[in-house]
Length: 161
Image (cartoon, rainbow, N blue to C red; front, top):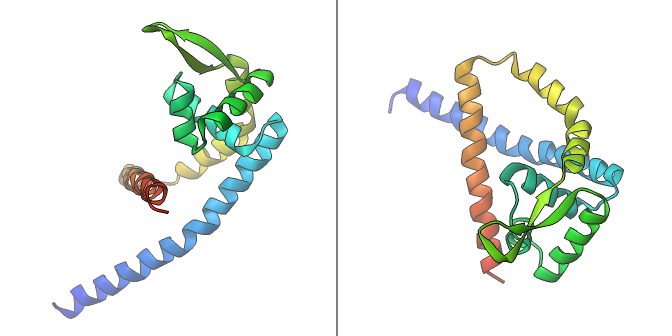
């Protein structure tokens, strides 16, 4: 390895360490934002995560929601009851199976969540305007790789005592 390659490798390791060390603080602030928005919507954070999952993935079963947010079926049922009482979700028949019920977000619930995120979304768009296309592609790749890594870690933690 040449001096240049070694220096580059050391720089990459140092930068990777800086990224790893910066992530918890960023995540903590995102958790705070989600907690504040959930409180303003009159729901708990887990309920808020459920509404976000429905916004991202569309209507689904209570069991799928329970797994997505890490709840037992009984806890998920109570979560859905709270969100329905808050006007954020509704239970609808599954058009593919008469026996199944889907949970879907209401327009009112989605409008409320989007209104609370409007400031952060606008600020993020402004911040991202400073990045070129290659940097944005790198950010997208980073997010996807670490999203998949987080999913794998959740599965690992759930599967081992």
